[in-house]
Image (cartoon, rainbow, N blue to C red):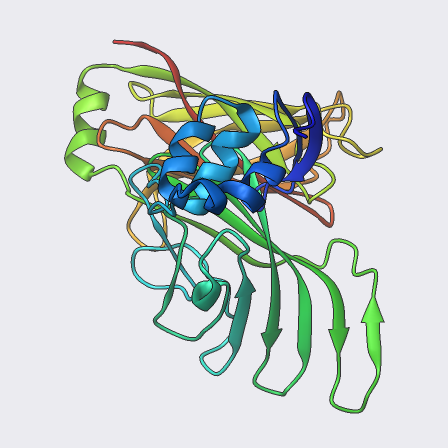
Length: 315
């Protein structure tokens, strides 16, 4: 007999979030019995798509190519002329990434200098955490989470280590604020478009997200670039933590080229009403018409990743 109104809880492999799926029938029972009626798996999959859990099961029966999200689909593991920072600290290190959203042969892969991680199917405007283990040149092993925040044209990533193993057998855990592999990459806005926005006296406001770790990713970014005056300033709010809960001011600074020749802004950070500088920030401009920004800020020993997209433009 078919059990009606069966509920089940399932975990999303890409986000780690848990979803409740409720279906009118016990489809697991049906799948065990479908062959008695001469139905193919494809036929059953098509019948199941009308049910919330059936849709998930249909996807499992009839594998589809991962949906490409956004225009920037590969995360470089080492720094080059197009990226500001990379995951690898030196040319000899290697990093192994576990991605449960991939096919079996692709779930666990090791990367070295010159290679890129496929992030085509990662969600836009959300933090994705992927487990990693890195082996350094001196054979020190380090593991934790690779955090990725992806937009249409850019990606901000950090390594959040949780342990470190040394060749002599000693281990280190609870590595608070031991950030590595901080990287901002993407499709940079061309110099000609930056110049066009300057000539149009454009002023663009960006809004987005900021994060400091797997358990602190609810920060809100608001930043404005005044292309006419070639300046930018903004703020990050809503992060947890005694040092951050009063908000981070991204101080007004000049639009200029960075060491790699990319247009961006580098400035100082303050916290709350304090007058004292607490760190610095650096951001890049991305997209065909400067519609995105992405960057990194520091407050004392805390590293904050942030990214935002255009919400208003005047010119």
